[in-house]
Length: 546
Image (cartoon, rainbow, N blue to C red):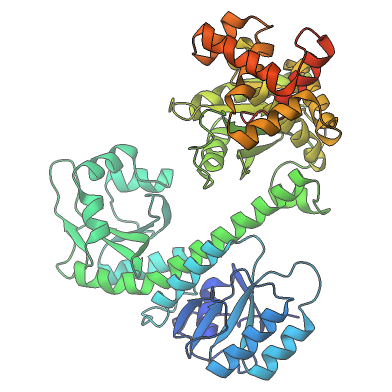
């Protein structure tokens, strides 16, 4: 069994040791073996991306792209032991016990062996470990258990001389101190809604207070002005990264003159707590998203529906989202589309989880109406509003494929298949009616869906040495891809040369010349309906705009 870090009592701060780092990051990394114990110092982080092993003394190596079951992994662990490294972190090995050979090599070398959890990517893990190294070893001024932000706010209040609110970098309330004394309306609204009122956020953004808070190493003390009450605040940092902020409001008297110094000490105390809380929340969120991805891929375990938090025994469906073909090359691919889609769907009152996909995002919706017609209407309304929300930037319009409703959450993969097919059809269809659509189901585009099936079959069994294949070979050899475009336009516009020329934005005479060259190069008989049909299907199959 993997070794587990011991539980913090809250009486000491995490140290710059293997144990201290695990206290802060156990939600994203798991200790498998610590031959020299967990009190070995960790002095730095080394992202291993070199062809040969090597590490600094006391470093923790992050073995990106190294298969933990490979000979390279064994060599890396042995080299880490020779160099005095604290340990090596590999990617999760998946199901089954850890590699016995790797464990034996680590035990012999005296290097700790750790594994990244499957739901965390390398960037997230490296960021968490670097932040942990920054905050570990800070002096602890309270006996608050690590990560208990509510208790931390209560403990800090008497130290700073006011009512404390701990906030995320996005002005959401993470914790606050309780008191029986009068507080102003802004603090009361902030606590009740768990976020700073939007008008105050906008005001502080415009007057530069947020910028000063992020860039000032110490605390800011804002005196009362008009209807804006007194506040003191400080950003909580791990190196250059902002983990959150601490705000102090006066109660029955003005804030003491020592509040700024007290806040600087409080920020040092709070750093480990905020990092632990953030990593824990991220780990929980990633586990939920991993369960959703498993369901969408049809590989969900028996407990996957329950782990998503969506109603497992109620109807579900999937929305597949992608940028339209014109914007696909510049559409953001960092998960922002999935996060925005999830926020919109939950804001509309739906049970929803969104995961990033290669082309955009997929949204898994649970708890739909049990009546199929009403459930379908729910999906149509949601797809309409979501498409308008996501297409506000004309440079990045989206298309949404609506999956068929299924009775239970464990059947989500079936809905995902139809959602992906509907999205494919939307992006592939050429008619003006289809081009005007922002969303559709497979039932909305039956002919295009049928054509896609035919093209997929043709892809696997394309006839050898047809005339259009000869034309394609010529274009590849000479670079005359305009000949393929010419034939494609001619067939798509029902052999109307004038319309095809306009579609390609070339003079009619130029188009006729190119069409004659097409016939000369590949010998196609454009009066033969079978030749035209085969050429049209093949050109649709190989169209780069698909």
